[in-house]
Image (cartoon, rainbow, N blue to C red; front, side, top):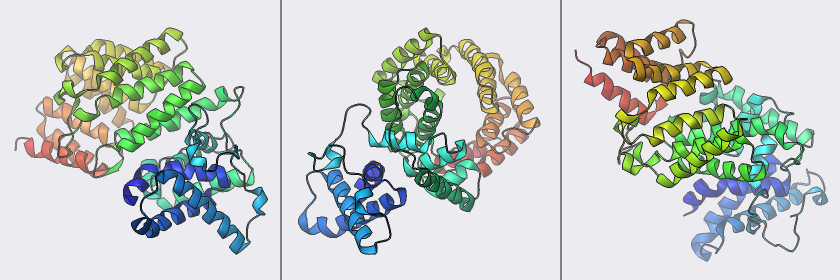
Length: 405
């Protein structure tokens, strides 16, 4: 029970504790104290009716006791009280729109006083609960370096007295890009985990979608709408992306009857809304591509020419090697594997994406389809050395075993 609660609720409890205590380190200590106390008391006293509220209150009081006992922090009067003093339990104050502690935490982590790398690292650590090692792997950075980056970011927030709040309406547009970026990173880590035993981490992608909805309510800009559409359309395929034993299922092999039609309908409507504004950007364009996939009743009916056309627009609006790679795969589907392989080889040839396992996996697949077995084997092996995720490792090993000798 406590383990499950820690996995599902600890980041939300932490966000509320940060708001109440005004200090990242103090809040993290309070979080751990609250769960330690729960482990001691709940087996004898029973689980409280509202476990999250109990954890928030216990953590807060433990922190205050610690401050008194150690007398090493500022006076207790400096610890912010809940906004509404008539509410005894802060976690019960679950407002419906902008009054969301995790959204506050996202905006705090994305404050312009922090560097973009620090914003992302801090968000992944504090909002998503990723370990330092997991974030370091995603950044291709040694863990000690990443840990120092997070420590410096927290110190910057504390020393600069960066407010723990959603910015005013006049400030929101300037803060939007960073927040959209980190919400999408959270979603991506949930949609395709960077390491570990599972392909996906549902709690992260679900939380990203929830934050995306809050953001659209707060600021219904086209790109916020487009990002929410993109996440919903990707999330619609979750149930079809793995076998019951957790193995990876490619898009063409998925049982489309398992796709979530409510997510698809909502995502398609949001894409249309964002596109009709004519002020859209890369998230809306990616959502438009996902919409084409979502509308195909079977793999053969996929409109690859339309997908390539969307990638052409995306490459002009937001050029990157990853966009080039995805376009190359789409070109291979439209024009044949040789055309796609030439594009991928050009990307790798200039030194881009050489450490990105999906680039080598895509090259391996095209070589396999062309009957270039030796090249396919080498590319699959290269991809295998670069991925830290077990379902992808199993998939690549199966592909290698299936190649003719």
